[in-house]
Length: 461
Image (cartoon, rainbow, N blue to C red; front, side, top):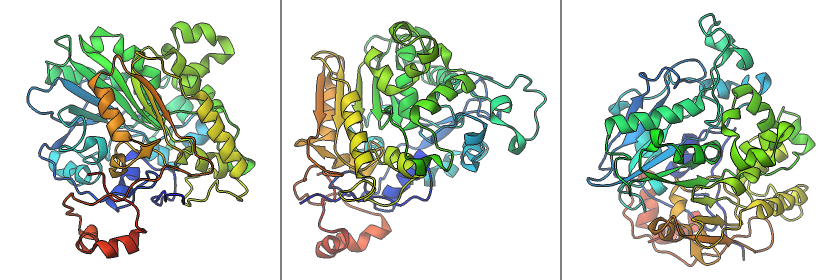
């Protein structure tokens, strides 16, 4: 039968950190998998605020920030990861209190001690695991989102010195949208504090993110990799998780709360946040004038991206289905199942994803990995270790790509039939010691674990 895609529960559109909380609660999201893991980091995360960079600011004008974890001694790899908390595209969409909360750095952890509880819970799993990750040696910068522009914008209010209090400002003429400048400042700060970044040919930057962070990385990847001022002599590759927006119309139910299609959002955001500087080269030659916005949307942009990348995107992306069917983050797992009113929409979405996924050529440096699972963002979750498609574990495919990212070229796309039909994973044994209190009783009694979790795999060993 079908494997279970166990889903975390969320009441609304959540930040990337909030999504990661599902793992802290022992809930996985990879198809046929579930994980128990409580990291024991040996290198602390520290907050770094970009006070010295006047344009690297949040929507309210407060300094942007990133969380940094030093790599292993001698490592020449840097992982720059863009947070994903969504975006907004006009005054109405920005009025959501969620957007205001994520438009300021005032609530960010200010010290290592203050950050530690959150880092232990959210920033030491999956690809961030300091002991098991394929890039465990890398210096890591987790770039906090506070500009609501998917790191694409470059605009400030006409008169930034005469603004009303933050809660009263309107986005279109009262917010700063400086996501692109935040990216530039992060790299400059990294090169200032760790001056060996980009000093020699052979240094490697792995640049990416999840959701809105992945979309921002797709739009800025060639800009970053092509600038010696940003990365020096370092080579750049992309690591993109759940950022493939496709052209599809939402249901009338989703439109009621004010949700718009991915294309309408991107077209409006391009103007509001001033992302035009990222629309250049062959993509601009292909999409001119009224179609320029397409160069900010992955389904249209990816064929023109020159930087090698690894893309993972589900054919039943949970964010895309929930938001476009209901207009909010859907908690259930039968959103598009057989016999449901939304089955047709879910299958249409799946076919569009399959159609817009790139077809990498041998030696292109591009790898595409697409399970038929109901999840959104998997790289930073414990389910990273058990995600499985066409007989291949995500982590193993990623490891092989990382060995020669400039010369790889492959596409793993699951072909099973039906909503959330993902691959069946062989029974896995839990060998990793688990310290999380809520996991303790389960680990002590494997039979109880099977009863409570349904007998699905726990952790890739």
